[in-house]
Amino acid sequence: MELDKSKYKHKETLRVRNFQVDSQGIVHNAVYLEFCEIGRVEYVRNLGIQLLPTGIFNDGVKINVKRNEINYESPAVVDDLLDVYTRISYIKNSSFCFEHLILHHETGKLLVTQKSVQVNLNHDTNRPARLPDNLRKIITDFEGDNVEVLE
Amino acid sequence: MELDKSKYKHKETLRVRNFQVDSQGIVHNAVYLEFCEIGRVEYVRNLGIQLLPTGIFNDGVKINVKRNEINYESPAVVDDLLDVYTRISYIKNSSFCFEHLILHHETGKLLVTQKSVQVNLNHDTNRPARLPDNLRKIITDFEGDNVEVLE
Amino acid sequence: MELDKSKYKHKETLRVRNFQVDSQGIVHNAVYLEFCEIGRVEYVRNLGIQLLPTGIFNDGVKINVKRNEINYESPAVVDDLLDVYTRISYIKNSSFCFEHLILHHETGKLLVTQKSVQVNLNHDTNRPARLPDNLRKIITDFEGDNVEVLE
Amino acid sequence: MELDKSKYKHKETLRVRNFQVDSQGIVHNAVYLEFCEIGRVEYVRNLGIQLLPTGIFNDGVKINVKRNEINYESPAVVDDLLDVYTRISYIKNSSFCFEHLILHHETGKLLVTQKSVQVNLNHDTNRPARLPDNLRKIITDFEGDNVEVLE
Image (tube, rainbow over all chains, first blue to last red; front, side, top):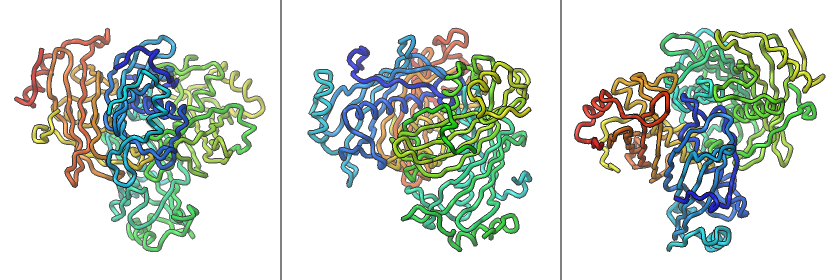
């Protein structure tokens, strides 16, 4: 897990809302997965790729989340501004991995670290399929040496 | 709005969860619309109608919510058990109206009253279409004198 | 309900997220209440009032939603940008009313109209209490002739 | 990760709701963390421990989620019934680990495996504190040989 935020080339700033906290008054553990997903969607929008109403990206790629890992380092409360940092750490044959740091916007305190493995699915069979070469190129052009290509 | 719970022939009991409260520690105002929807889905399941993965019912009917009205009488907190009462109060040509009471299960205290106008949509045009006769019959058979037929 | 968007002095633009749609692929009816609440919180932030971690505003005012009315005119889908317009239409002794229009950002199409009655609560008793004069002044200064003062 | 469901002594059955699916029509990845939390709350209720409105359990223990790991094996859709299996796999000094399997109720197909590390917090300092002996005893009495005590 990359903890150096300078290795993350994308940042999205979000506000914690009243309906995102739990009975302890802190952001509910599941909500951070929503925050990370917002980070991912904005990361790929920045690369020119957009989510369609069908849940498939406009380059024809259908992605599902295969695995999430998330560590809660410090809690956030309602109305906090959070910085969601997003990077792609590796690309394999049909899968790739997003990493996120979530920091408190004003204090810079680390709140959450997250890894999310995504898999490319064939539209018809819903089985894993090789990530298209154009998507590989877009990602490696953007991430440069920060992304490992493992296949 | 019918306040006499004996006029409601369907009841669904739900538990308030940790992620459904807000920063004041009470159930968030939007979440009660989810509770009412659960009441509606279970009400129609009791009539032999089931929601399909496409969001359309298994009798071919596609329903959208047209209007919600909700009054918050008293708050609920995490782990409370709630009784969601559901009835259909009227049927028009293409629309019909659900009414709900939400009561605290243990104390019987009234927490919420809700009205929800539903409209039947033509699958192709997404425009309002007359409610099928078989659905009308199922509803009027179940509700009896409690439902007004207005057309 | 005021349908003329020029009467709304506050606008907040939001993106529809993947977890906010339902099985028909359209924004779930309850989620619009979250969107309207975001509009309200940003409206009052613009007036210099901020939500604290306790769910109480930093001017000491504790507000609860008393009633919501919402009409669904047209559906939104994932990744749509929405404009949430917010105004305060009237102030009574202990309560006041927000009105919202939600429009599709690109097309300007009207998606939702919403009214939300808020009540000021005494912190200790949780019973309705007169809205403080300073809050009345801030609102009437901002809204001008657009707000009715009814008491 | 324990994949043998006979090692899980607690099962909670849940219905997938319309507002829990995403734009692909499948349960959103974050929602499974809510399902697992419901499993945990019902697991501890079965041991005689209840969540209070403050988000603290009625035996005085304040628990926060420290880490979640979740693998998505197969998707669920709206109206599916899911079986959430819950066990505690280990207890350390101040932390312990829940494991969950989520299976499709009718087909028995494995949908999700999940691990969740919980930490006991001192109420005043919010720093990790040793799990009370009575809680340790309740857990080890229930789980028997299935739980590892590591301290």
